[in-house]
Length: 294
Image 1 (cartoon, rainbow, N blue to C red):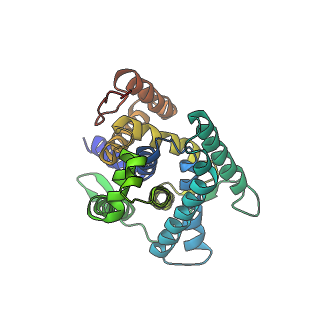
Image 2 (tube, rainbow, N blue to C red):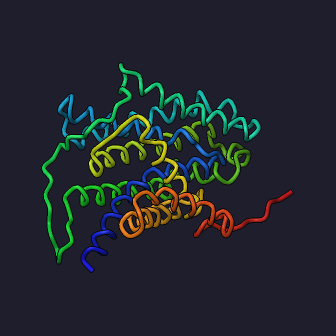
């Protein structure tokens, strides 16, 4: 029983990291109906910026985390303005190809030797790992830090969306761009802000990923980003609670598959979930099928 509970704890740790990434996917899709396939690579940049922050420059890890968040937010805004805004109202396939191109650019640009380099890097944790054993279940201070950080930023995100004017503007733009303009909302500014928030959360996720799984590389965001996207689809793309729910489910499924089936099957199971969800419930667990108006 203790082993099973331990796997649940491990799945929760992974699911919380996925949640931070999935939120970026779901926020961008909710406001412009575009899948930002460069989002996983922004997460990768956050992992590297945080790593260099608390190792090379010897900054306290909370400061490095904030710097990673700000850096990724800036990258998100640049992506929106340079890559996505010119094609916002173009054919969807054009925007999709543009997003994939931005993803490849970040991956290969960061692989250059004078940026991050192409090799795997082992992360030296900036804090002493403390382990508590409760009824045979190991819980570390790293897991506690991840849980507390995710809960804090999720709470701040909810307050931002439902208690501020910017949040009201985001909800208005997600409903209808033209109606938002008629109500005096700066649509371009609101969309850029949404990209900044989602990318900043991905940057936090990258730093926490380095804490939990201390090895990073420049293609880290490919598979991790795809799984976070699957989590967003599973919970209901465009819905913040759906992204969190889907991420927690994905974390549990992946860890349980690795523990009780095969570690080599964990990726296959993740993509099988995507196929099943799209076949049975394309709107996701919390999503609703809405008729399209003509």
